[in-house]
Length: 169
Image (cartoon, rainbow, N blue to C red; front, top):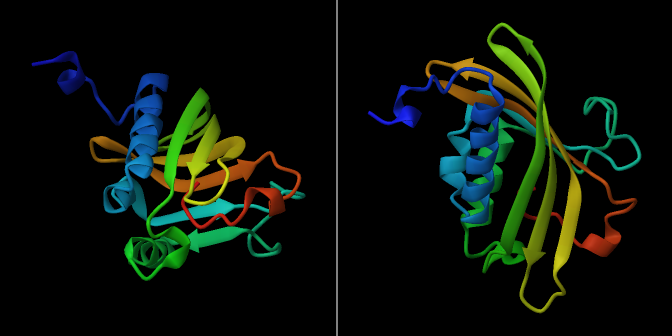
């Protein structure tokens, strides 16, 4: 049995959290969106907050994206549809995830952060770079760590020059 098979994947260690984040980046870059959804809890949320108020509450501010699991599933159905002209053929992306830190552990939940760069290549458009940091709320579910909340905080002052965020950051 390999070391990976004997390690408890549900422990909140930096290695386990990094593995989760790196797997997430790999799945999103490969457009394996259904597999990506499996990394989330059934009640997960995905946020891209406003640039001028990254710590805002989505109930009281206009977010670029504020999706619950139902909206995420609908978004993925739309992104995989050939009639979704914003992402068909889909963008080619490459994510770089670094500086993974576990900020807080409370029982079966933890908060972790990471920096990101997402390179987006789209036909007939110049390459775009999205930079920022993620704030994750993680939950232990059986033998796995799952994403309960995912917040992608962009460093850009404004999104206009970056174009539409029609893919999952």
